[in-house]
Picture (cartoon, rainbow, N blue to C red):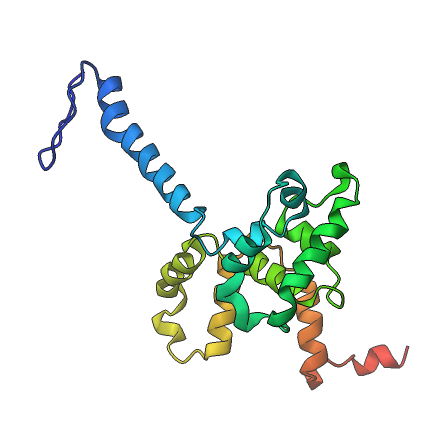
Length: 205
């Protein structure tokens, strides 16, 4: 079996095709992926502060510094309803979960949002909403860009913004099953027409 070598970059010496692709493809790919994960979830990342609000992490890390948590959450100060009360709120938040059973603690942001009282912890509730909706990557946006060519065709040149957004949402979230009968019934109820009315012969029965 012949090995195809790259002509535009240096190749790592290898004795077989398996060793060649392992050293030139697999290992560089894993290194790049590991580096991106380290950068994404490093201590300087803006998403680290959200994970420090998860009760499992609060209980597991006994040395969790509230001042460090505040620094990580500082970029989201304008999104908090009462940013001045965040230090006391973090203290009450930690004390709340220290008295709970460890096997029933929320382990992710979505579960934590479901048990967070917005009236008691307004800042943490707002931060958890941001953490749950914050995209981890740009795949969602890139997927929408790639769909524009298929959505905005010649026959749809006069399509409005609302219709295009709705079609894009249906195409992006293709795994969601849309009940066609419910859509038709809603269309009939919101847009009454004579053709949708019952027949005169049916009413006489």
